[in-house]
Every structure is written in C-alpha cells, then in structure tokens.
Length: 539
Image (tube, rainbow, N blue to C red; front, side, top):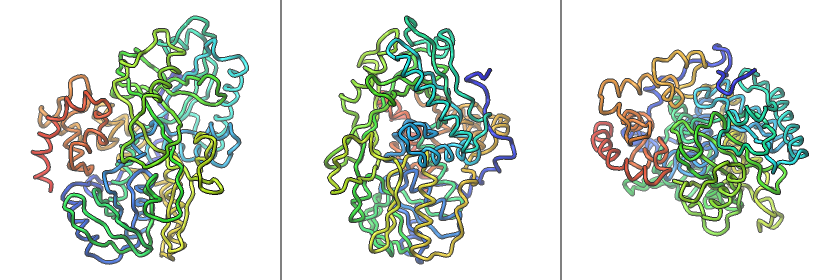
C-alpha cells in the first residue's frame, strides 16, 4: 500500500548535474552589463518579449540550441499569469474527460518531463482526496473513479513511472478522515485518492528556467519594456532609468501572455480569471493530502485545496471571463471569494467565514479567442480550449498564446521551431525535454544534501549554499517574519543570484510572503534593510 508521504522519483541516472551557480546567477550588476550589450551591440538571433513561464522557456530553448538570445520583460520574472497558478502540474485529466485527447496526452507527457527529468526538485507527487459525501451521488462517484483510472492510463501512455505517480484507489471513510480531518464525517462513504504533480512554487519554476537560460548565454533583462515590435527587433525602454534604445534581432517571439495583442496586431485574447484564497494553517487543521471538492451542479469541475510548504493553504480556482482593459495585477473579486468559500464549506465539519481568508490572488489565463468574429461570444471561458497556438504576423513576428503552465516547455519549443523556420535561423532541434534546470538532481541526490528539506524543495542542489549563508551569519538564518519559514539568507540569495531588484521582487515572487497583506506589511522593513545593504555590493 502506498502512503501519501512515500518518496517518489526516477532512478538516480535520470537527471544529470545542475548548471553551475556562477554561470546562471542573475544580479543587478549583470543586468546593467547585459542591457548595455543588448542595446548597443550586434544583432542577436532571437529576441523574446515576456518572461513568464513560456517566455523564459523560449529563451532557454533558443539559447540551448546555440542561438544568441535576449529576453526582456517590462516588470519582473513571473510578474503576470505565471505566479498566480494553482501550483500544480496537471496530467490532462480534465481534457481527457472533454474528449481533447491531444492536449490531455501532451499535458501528461510534460508533467513527466518536469517530474523525472528537468525539475524533480521543484515538482513532486501530491496526493488528493475526493471525499464521497452525501452531496456526491453514487453515479458521480463512479464517473469520477473512471476518470481517475483514465488519468492513470494517461500516465502510462506518457511513460511516467509508477514510482513517480502512485495509482489512484478507493479509500475507506476512516482513511479519508485521516487524510482530510476537516471533512464532515457524517454520511461519509469513503473517498477517492489520486495523485498529480505539485510545484513547490510557480514563480520559482520561472526563475529556474530563466537562470538556466542565462547559464546557456541568454541575456535576461527585467524592467525593460518593449515599446514596439517588428520582425527585426524592438524599441525598448529601461524602466529603471528611462533610457530608450533598440535591440536588433533576426527573429522576435512575442510571449507576453494576455498583453500579446497590444504588441502585435490581429492577436485576439479571451482572458479568463482564476482566483485562489489563502488560508492560515489553523483554518483547516493538518492536511496530509489536498482535496478535490466537487462543485455542485457541475459534472467535471472541482475546487482544489492545496496545503503549502509555508503552512498556508490555497483554495481555488474560478474560471470567469474578463472584459475590458486588463490591469497589470488583477484583484480577486468578492464574488469569486464567496463562491470558493461556499463550495469548500459544503464538505467541512466546521464552516469557514470571510474573516478566515487572509489573502487572495487572481491571475489571467491568455486563452485564444477563436470565435468567428472575434467577439468572444463563447458561453464561458471554462469551455475555451487550453491548447496553445503559435501565430506569425505578416511581418514575421512570432506570437505564442494559450496553453497552460504545465505545457510551457512544449509551447516554448513550438514557438522557437516556428521562429527558426520562418526566419531561417541555423539551429537544430529542441533539447529542453532532457535539459535539467538549475538545482535539478535525482531524488536520491537531493535527499542526501546537507540542508533543511524545505530549502531542498525550493533550491535543489543549491540548498546547501543558501543554508550556509544563514550558518555564517546568524541574523540571516532567522525568519524574516515570525511564524513564516523564509529567512534572510533566502532574500540575500535572491538578490545575488535570482535577479531580485526591489522589495516587491522579494516579497511577491522570489518568496510568497506578500500573498497575505498583513504578512507583507510586517516583513517590509526587514526586507528594505536587507536590500539597502545587499544591492550596492552587487550593482
């Protein structure tokens, strides 16, 4: 019998050593040097606009083929959609249920790539329980169980090892109460236990991808806004100094997500808002497993409850269309918060209230509008395909839109393939399906690292170096915020090696302290003090 806490992973030979820290390090000083070279230097092979998961993935894909690459973002790594996901690497079950076999298989394959080859330090198996309460009919339970079996068939077709993702199974009411103690025991018939891939954090994945691209020679430039694009490059502005210039390129890839249409004419995006709640650890008590909570009246829709390494719990997500102008950061509306609370409370022994929600976040999925007239009249965004598209403008700019976090690598590969073909660049096939990200190693090697397990799950093979900062200076070894595990050493590492330039980078993306506004405010002075001492030494 497999325990939810059983170790999972491929043989030690499956993952090569990680890239050296020095080559992959991003810092304020490196940014200054790389920006000067990009704006005043020779023509590069590929310019990527956008440094979310797909844009960072495109930079890595192109650089690892031997092409010269510059990648820019008006803000920070993972500033937009890529930091607001459910932190899951899905196997495509939802798409299988709706008959979209191609994208279901693609999702399962990419999940296996992340878990077994490229990022086993950041992605691990997560158990989920679907409690069979009186609200779940016997027919719906049978349908859900059949779906989980089909999902396991997807795992097999994707050649992901059983040791990586255990088999789904029916569990007793006693086991269900053990794995999900907050669930109402009255009338409980048992549960369905299943497994999927879980990210330590989505923004950390993007940071690892961007740093791996830098290790292969890509210039990764945050706070650089593309003002206009053409097939031969872009006019850009340094958002820190206001200086403008031009980056010349043989190929341009627009990976700016929901904002892609603002840079290239003819791109129609139908954004969908996904909202999550943030709860304190004591709100639901211990959670050995996550939860799938069926949405009443929906056949194949669930609210997810996902415990985090920092003790918080995320609850999500919604799928609502967004019209009008798009803000740079989307607020979670009260209607979404109320919906998620209502669904969650339908299975809880002790109901939660609005005051139990200490934070909320919302992201916009860049779904491609495929309506005939571009009016976006699909009945709801939940029905819009998540398949990505690579589009080439009449001038030759390549735009990649749609898709989801799980398939970022394949999206990036397809975008670079198109750019190579259309612009006739001298490059071979993609290498990223077998290219480990910074920090990656086999589960056996990760388990042997002399560092706290939480750091290993965040930094992989670099965890001992992060830990050593706190050992050398006791002040850095202390938590930045009482009751939260992030230490000053992690913040210093983010400034020295992960491209963090200000307090928002540290609080909102390199760590997720900022997801709870009260925690953000409490940690702000300590973060500013660290930045004051750290940045002058590395600029």
